[in-house]
Image 1: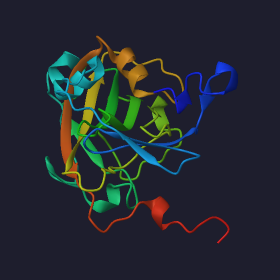
Image 2: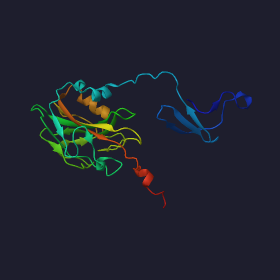
Image 3: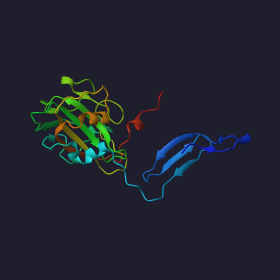
Image 4: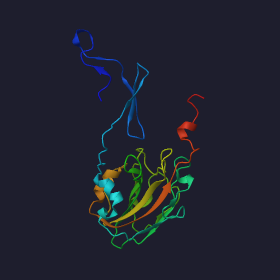
Amino acid sequence: MTGFLVKGGAPGGKDAHFGRLAGLAQMKDGSMLVTDDTNNIIYRISYNLKAMPPIMSRDYISVLLPEIAGANATITVQTSAFQNNGMIPDKYSNYYAGVSPELKWSGVPNNAKSLVLMMEDPDAALKPVTHWIMANIAPNVTGLPENVMKTEMANGAMQGANITGKIGYYGPKPPREDPPHKYHFQVFALDTKLDLPSGFNRQALLDAMENHVVAKGEIVGMYQRKPDVRNKEEILPPRGK
């Protein structure tokens, strides 16, 4: 889509336009809504042919197929906040306080040199949504407290960028009317420390982890948006009020 253009529609055979693209949204059925800044019309673009199978990137497959990480699932991950495959309490959602849950783990092998934490949502439309990544956790650390701060951490541990591009934890925030999303809290033991830049993203982390994972484990929590909850931006008063 190149815009609201008319080939040769202007005097002298020059190209013309009858509006500039001013808005874009995607519907649940996959169709797109677009509008322009001149005609006050919303245009719907749909695709009626048979859907093509989704293309899964290597990093997405590693979430759905843990064996891709090349290690045994010997690490046990637990939390006092919820049971495995249980519902995540509201305060850990970014619709509410958005604090990170307490986590504990055991079964880290003796040859581990560092640990990696990843929290992801593979049920989101953009697969997967990265909610939390952390690298170079000391191998003798056995957990994290609730509400981990987004500042620099002790012993060389570092947090990376979440889906919003900000550093640290970003709580569950599934769309309205979606069924419960699954959130995977994964802990990986590595045979090395990682050389990562400040503010590293998920892909940089996965690239650095490749061929270094010696053990892994996870706990899965579920969260669904409540019908009456509103986005924080919907609640904020208009500027200047």
